[in-house]
Image 1 (cartoon, rainbow, N blue to C red):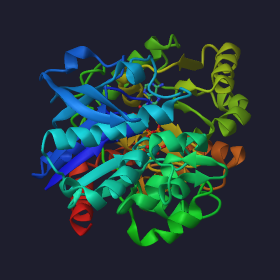
Image 2: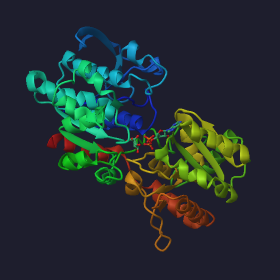
Image 3: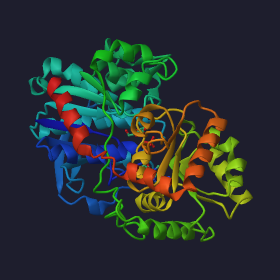
Image 4: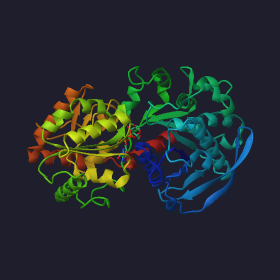
Length: 472
Ligand code: ADP
Ligand code: GLC
């Protein structure tokens, strides 16, 4: 079976969030199960050129706006799967991955070029697996080209929905010269007087997948469908929910090269050292007996900072340390700065995208990990936390609800703490509940162990994808 995975970000090349972790890990997991999986993404400025270890595919012919471009793909196998990185300086030699006026044009070009690469390699995949709105173009184009190009005749398309909140909206006037100006494409793209690459992709794809079963249900409701719930209901027979896995080659406290000392479920002693190391890194007092509550996230409304903001004072009053790593909206960065300034000996912050090492050091050194998300398609940090003996406190939404089990002191089951309503008071109560058990080491260790022993490896999720590919 041949699967081409198209993505706008993938570790270890380029990352803003969990999409990169998933896109980097899935191809490798598929290859381990004998699927011929290949990864295609743009070559951004920020990508470390040392990762490009295998030459290039030169002179791939791309027709674009009535002209012919010849592009180059750099090759790498460092992700454990053949990876092709599209070099087009005009669109991708920029400091950030997203956030430009012409993002829709950049990723429409990427889609076009990725399909051109497949032809150039004479490698017709069974499935083109696109991810999120940037690949909505590829999926839409696949549907059209399959009608008249023998090469793609047997190729199906799968679109993974990692976050329906990002819809790839752009001015519908651009549809003409992107090549989508006629029906049915034009209408498929139309969304509330704009064009949406996500919507077109949802309509065109042969099958759809979301990143947890719970989220697959939620996006079919008006509350959580971001305006596309009707369409997702209409396509619900082709919509699967497959929970993301964890790449334990990367996120494993027994082998993690980034953390102060390795540790395991059998011997948690090293976690104390990691905690000391973390306190030092954030310039906080080296008091290992006080709990550290941590958060790592993009600073957007989705992640629940509006709740944290309301109870910031109360969290400080519990006497805990709070460590936050995040990049994004100015209002949340400013909040973090004010919070730190008000309680510099308790609140440690890092504003910006820190890369992998610091994220690992926080997972290893913290006691609790907060994810009070408004919505969360899957969420990865709660699963990383569990493996590092860091107890997640989450809101019961999307993948958080699917992957974290509330601790029950009566029988010692459960892996974390979970609250329901999107309210600051409910979050604060859960934090207090967690602190109560933190103060009772026997019970706390039970929760840690329960979480550390959960197996969220990619093997099981990859099997589900393979089954999905086969059924298409
Ligand atoms: P999302 O994809 O919505 O951002 P996930 O929980 O799926 O949420 O994944 C987030 C990933 O991004 C995790 O690997 C996390 O460690 C990482 N991450 C988020 N923000 C930062 C940051 N500022 N610095 C370093 N890593 C970050
Ligand atoms: C998205 C979601 C996150 C998910 C990630 C990877 O960015 O916000 O919940 O874990 O994609 O699928």
